Image (cartoon, rainbow, N blue to C red):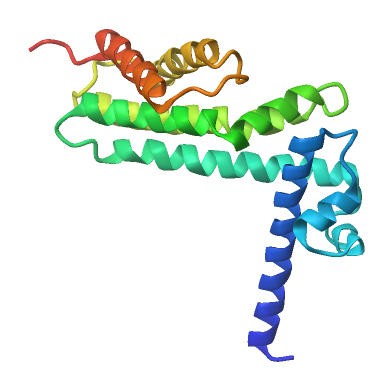
Length: 214
């Protein structure tokens, strides 16, 4: 086998594994853990059932890895949103409102809602998954946001503050009202409503953390 063929084979195996994990998450979200079966996951992924077992040994392993993969995908979307603050431009309020809106859209999309539901629904069976998912989603987001806010504070665009605390306050201003409007994720919130929550959160945040008057 040539090196090129070997690389293609490895790439194909990785792609197939990802397809299985995506399919597993879809089926678990649709059926729940107890009602989901490996055969349905194989059909969703477009592979044979033995192929699923070749990549992931059993249903429990499938569940764990599917949630971890979904959490990583959610994290990537959130980090891309926060990256907007690397170069916020002259209008910091507008940049923060844009980032807040993007983070809320990620929080309320189907994948994020399914991830939260599956994690909480199976807490008795998989208690460790709460920490696994949170470390990849909310904790990672809070750290990235704190880093950006620290840089803005050092640049004099926000007042001196504890950046981790400031990030926690901004996230609380976003998630609290959104949970209320969405009825804990059971009601679809429109883009206009999401924008309202984002703008109100940023307004309150800047009243607390805006730069000191010169």
